[in-house]
Every structure is written in structure tokens, then in C-alpha cells.
Length: 305
Image (cartoon, rainbow, N blue to C red; front, side):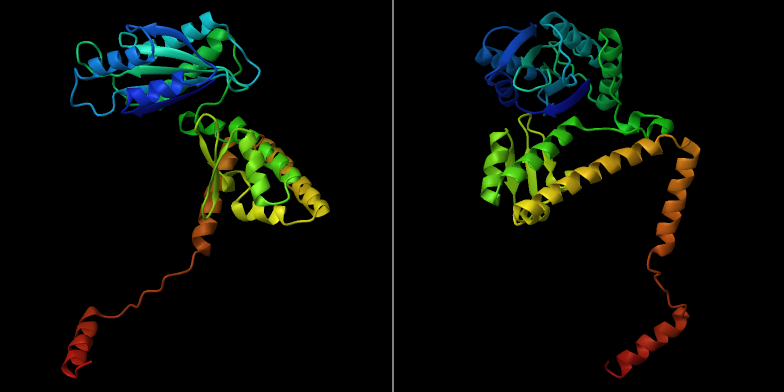
């Protein structure tokens, strides 16, 4: 299970995004009711109880791994547990499930302002979310996912991690490159798969969950894409096969790394950092007496230099 938290300003924008999806379904409400317009109005009425808070919106996304499904009752229970763990169980919130992707996910929109005007704190949110997700995996028998690296022990830092979102994008780009003869055709094909394309000096892709990924992060920078598109069909096939081979090698190297004791890995990192420092260009300093430099400047001023 993967959980994400965004703190925002506009209930109208957030609630509209969650409810206006074609395959969106409102699962549960807490201390609020009605249609979209009524919900937005009620959330805004309560937010006015704390005029000093500029960001009262707490938007949480909880995603299950591909292939895992929970019934609506259990999704509601997961949302209620999230409210308790993050401290907004006595505040307004709504729970929406989206059916537009291969992996099941829910959205929770909560009001950080309670009816007594107090505010739900947002400190350590990411740590709290990581702990909550591991607890839900145990409770509901879900596939276990590693927490963000900064919340792992040193022994777990080197465990191989796969970002399913980036891996899917990588595979989609590869398929589009294989059937495209120029950039315009490639962009058309990638948009058919539900991505927005931002092209400038580089290239980035935005998926249906509004997550932005640079092409360079997954091995397909703009220059790489253009180079592959300019190749003949036979050359393109070889280039894409070579890319696949490199991905497999990278995965095998990661797996080998996990067999090395953490102490040895730490030493290896220290040696690498030491080597990088030694290889940096040396910045020479002139060891000249400051008094002599002062006399030299005075002399240059006297002769008009």
C-alpha cells in the first residue's frame, strides 16, 4: 500500500477533481452530506472558523498494488483508520474510490479545521503515513511495500525498489517508440495511453493521477527519444532490445548488492566519497604575506594602474 498526502488551499478544486472523474464513487462522508456543491459549501463554512490557516485542505491518496482488490466496506474501514491515525476523525472528510486505473485507490479529502476552530497538525505527516500503511498491510493481509528510504534502517537502504508507476511509463514509451516513425506520431500514441506530454528543452510525462515524471529519470530523455525515432526499423528494434537488456542488468546488480553486509556497503560508500574528493580539481592558494599584497596595491594606485 502506498499513501500520499498533499496540503492545499482550495476545497472547490480538490473535491471537484475527486468527484468529477467519470468512474468516481463517493464511499463515505463524515460530518458532512449532500452533492458536490453542498459539500464544498460546508467545508468552506468550517474553514472560516480559523481565518489564520491558509491551507486547510488535506488530500490523501491510498493506492493498493496492482492485482489487489478490497470491497467497499474494507475501503471505508481503511479510511476511518487513516482518520484516527492522522488525527482528523472528528473533522469533516469524504472518501472517494476511483475505478479508472489498473490499481485500486481511494481519495480522502479532509478539513484540517475542526468545529471548535482548532487545526489538525501536519508535522511528520509522511512518517505517520508510512507507519499507517505498514499497519494496514498487516491488518488486511496486503502485499508489503517498503517505506520511503529516510524511514528505513541502514540495513534496508540497499533493498531493491521498483516504482510501478515509472516502470509502466517506461514500458509505454518503449511500445510507442516501436510503432512510431516520427515525434508527432509518438506523442499521439503516448497521449492515447492517458499521458500528458510537456516538451520544452526536455520532456516530461503526466499520468492520470497528475504525477509528473521526467523522461530522463527513466532513461528516455528527449534527445534519446528523438535519436531512436530517427533510426531505421531494424536499428530501432536493436536499440530497444539493448535498452531492455540494460534494465535487466541493473535489476540483477541491485539484487547482488542486497547480499553484501550493510557494514561493507557503508565502507564502500565512504571509499567512493573519498575517491571523488581526491579526484576533484585542486584549488591552489597563493601563500603570500598579506602585508606584501597591501604594499603592492598601494604601489599600483600611486602609478595609476
